[in-house]
Amino acid sequence: MNYRHAFHAGNFADLQKHAILTALLSALTADARPLNVIDTHAGAGAYDLRGEMAQKSREAEAGVGRLLAMDAPPAAFAALLQAVSDLNVTKDGSLYPGSPLLIARGLRRTDRYTACELRDDDFDSLRRVLAPYGFAQALKSDGYAAAVDRTGRAERTFVLIDPPFERADDYVQCVATVRAVLARDPHAVVAIWTPLKDLETFDAFMRALEAITDKALAAELRLRPLRDPMKMNGCAMVVIGAPPSVEPVIAEITSWIAEHLGEPGGGARIWRTGG
Image (cartoon, rainbow, N blue to C red; front, side):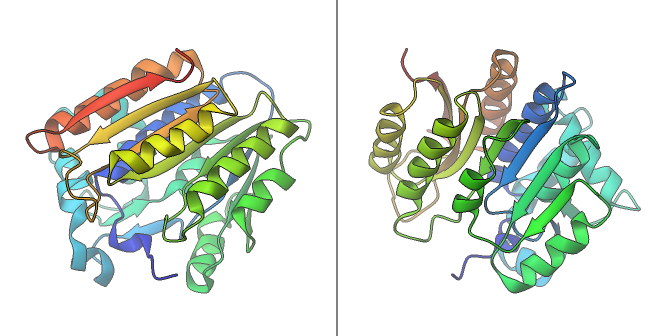
């Protein structure tokens, strides 16, 4: 696989994904029960926005760079921005936390976290990032299989599915994993990140999900109209079993990015299946 998230770290899609992720973690750790988190495509764990790959794309400048430049950023991004601040020694630091670091920071010692990554160099970085967290394990394993294998234990389960969507079967694998996870734990929470290139692909994916659950919340973020399927025109976070308290935050995050970082003709749509 050629995909490297370092090219895209801190872009608009990361802002949506990571702000929603921190909101979900806050809600899911609000009670005393332990939480079992499985991250199917963890990546390197943290990224240098001044590194060669990030500088080649410069996508972070139109994402987290815009947010950091604001005098009063929206409260919905506060946890993400605090994580960025804590990761950097100085205010103008260039490090950006990936999902693994955000998850590890948001969990308690009684929780469990499994971060899956197959690429050798990213896996080595992931292990270093997670080393300070005794409850976290970096696993060189197929994340789809690990999500199913590690669901159904005594703890509540939260699965983050965030593939690069370079494999032809990634959408099918996402749906199959959701089906298998819910079969083992009907109360599991599953969050899936997807690109938005054309509406037909996303609609087909949502129809497949609707066949197995009526508990999905879709947050569509469109930077521009979906006219060119060769571009990533936006992205979406689909959360199965989302706590009701998180829905307004998800809507605020998605709508703010569309309004402030999008182009004319873009927009946000937040809706639930089965409604």
